[in-house]
Length: 250
Image 1 (cartoon, helix red, strand yellow):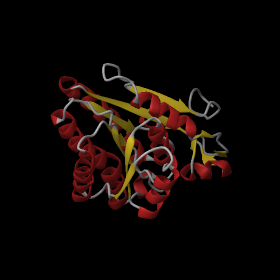
Image 2: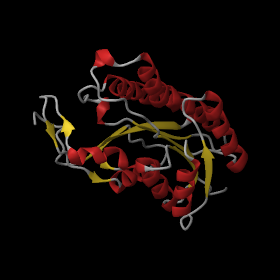
Image 3: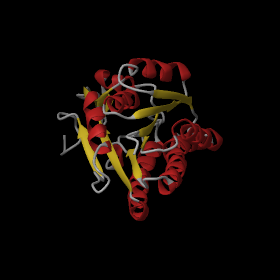
Image 4: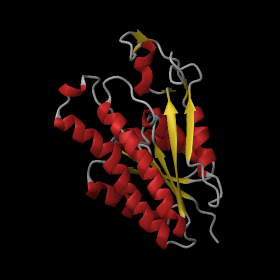
């Protein structure tokens, strides 16, 4: 039997996606690198060249046809899928709830929720039908799946919904040896969180500089989740900067 292990990582061109893709390559996975920017994906592939094989597939998580093509290319190249990391996501401008436009809401929902749902559907069908049967799906939830930041209703709503998708996929996957878990990250040091070094709006109305952690901690956590045997599942795993203002009252 082949030892081939194939993983798709969405949003693999930067930040958490890139770090996790490289970590999975080091752990023995062949990677399908998905994301909007081909040049950024190729940079990730170049960085991982010494660790294993990767395939760059530019993809738009708001386009069902693009998502379908991503999984078709994966099957054509590798013939199976063992891991899907639904990582790609976007935020919305930090403006009052009543000032958000419908377009801003729908863009966030389409990317953060509908995209992962469609990816999960494709992965589920593949994992259900392949031999040996089964696989693993990991969703990027964020600590916003538990508590919101000020002026974040679209992002927070989608991340709460991702938790429901994780639970439902885990339940429906039992019959087919498909495990589904969720990683909830707090303040990983990436380009997206660079603004935290200048101060982040707090619920009491002031701003404070928030501590961050090395993104490698997230990659290590994903590798842990991804390499469990399929009779074990990390349903929810929270990895966060120890000193960030999340637990408690400040």
